[in-house]
Image 1 (cartoon, rainbow, N blue to C red):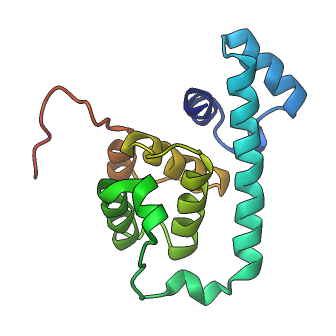
Image 2: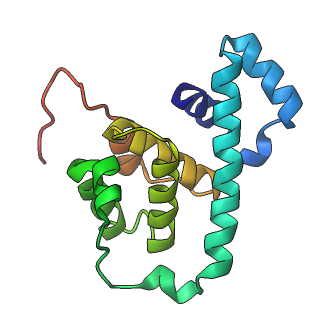
Length: 158
């Protein structure tokens, strides 16, 4: 599923640039993705759109500018892990995501139905949430989102 999501992100500048779902399924199949993976990815994206609308309607805009601290439930910590939680806190403190986007990211990570979602997958989820909202991270954050956990060389702090 995540390979399909990354392909969509890299191929289409904005979600509205994607063809209709029938044509998109054909294109993704032609590229070589399995039907099950395509179905999971498109279902996940549909649920992302619904979650985004639900959060936008349920929470007033001032929530986006909240200065409170997010306390994670044990289930969320189990699925996300401390590294991903720290990464989300970093993105929020850098003003890349707001609290509503953070909640959407958490909701979509929990929807993956894995016992623990890797940091690489969290990064893809962050990209997809921003992409679905027509927002593009700046170059430094973009590099951070596309870096992988298993880089052979250690990263240097500047």
